[in-house]
Length: 95
Image 1 (cartoon, rainbow, N blue to C red):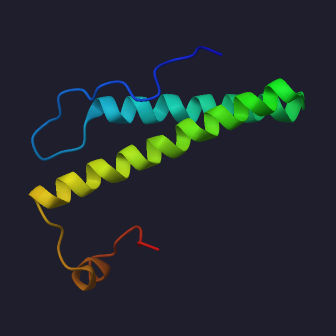
Image 2: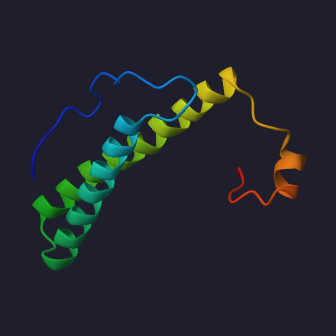
């Protein structure tokens, strides 16, 4: 599995929108996680577990990076109050 910098510098972001580079990084982290999980299922070894642990860490960081970006966007352009979002059929809810 190819090693890469877990937190490379952010790409230039579009004004007020999510960044395509972030999406690509998240896609890569998800793919690496799934590949490591499949490998651990097929061959349960210390090495495959270590690779899965590393891929899990990258996936958690990808979620955190996404959350941070959403918070930055909301600071610039606040979302409507939660009650209005529910009426509009929000697809997710905060836990």
